[in-house]
Length: 454
Length: 69
Image (cartoon, rainbow over all chains, first blue to last red; front, side, top):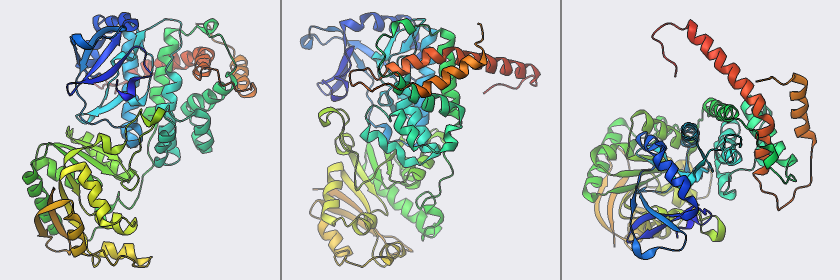
């Protein structure tokens, strides 16, 4: 059984012969058949909102709860909401609401609204939990409303009104940010937003106030109109949430760079050449910033590109470009390389860590080494070891101490980095890699390397 | 649908703030959201219908050929 699906009694995900399948249990037969026969599945898959699947026979591995096996279309990389930018989370939230609205038209409803049910494929969010639909009961409130607010609205509101880094609260709250916590962190002006006041503040107080209530049946008087109103209200609130203009070091990096336009052009050409030589199907661009070099590589070589950066403004900008250009093969994600996403959940076994999800053919590490080695005191050997676990080929830029950007890093601290030399760099990386090519970057003191894992 | 008097709506909202019961570990965390929806469903519907009415009125005065989002 897959680690992510053991909480669901409707079925579970498992891997068999290198492929991903989902068992549907007998208890979910009615809902599954309704999803398939009502036209809802067809509508959602046609709109590319729900992951398509095919029914398959795997005779030997049936268990007593078995009803059917389905084989969903494979998602290449599993990502989590705490790795998404504001707009990625916002699009995922709006997709969930759109699916709920469509489901209601077919007399079905989402029984959960977890952000983990959304993944990114071809530059867009897609709903992956086929077993999340249930029969809609006309008088019942939306059972997933609380979860939707914790998983989507609370982090979005915190990012919009307080700080974009607050989506990391998801890591310590696997079932979303509790509304009372969100409320405590919000500034007063956020609470004056009618949607926030209603869905976060009053809703949060109501949760606290009703913690002792036992029977829910007598409260079942929630009309379809009320359900539509609730969804519309959430949608309006989320659509109006915006990120304040972020001005950070990385968001403005290329406006403050020490490269000339000619050097940038040459660097881009070398990266493209090295990418072609490594002939990857998947590329991890570490420290991708707004994705300028990711895009240059993607334009010259068709592969799937994961563009990681620590800076929320850069990842946000990159995702906006993906949407603007309708790019299908670049996925911008948030990542602190010095503290990569950990495994979380029950027994550390529900949401996987960074290294077990992201293995690629080629790793791009441009203008990154000095931040890891000097800003974060990481030895070359540890960096090389980590990169070698990620991918077979490495395209890396060495930035010497004489470079103005390194001088900035050293300006306010003692230079304890006697080993930070090109010779030591090559020597330590050679323990893990064979250096295939080395190019000095014209107009700068930097060098680009193409390496292959030993 | 019959509209609730304003003072009742106000009392309902204020009561949400003042009612405070002891937290119990055995309670389903979804209960509060469930009950909240049933209490506020009517209010939401009124706002929704009002919003639709305004949008429909605006559409009447819109130039022909212009489309909604």
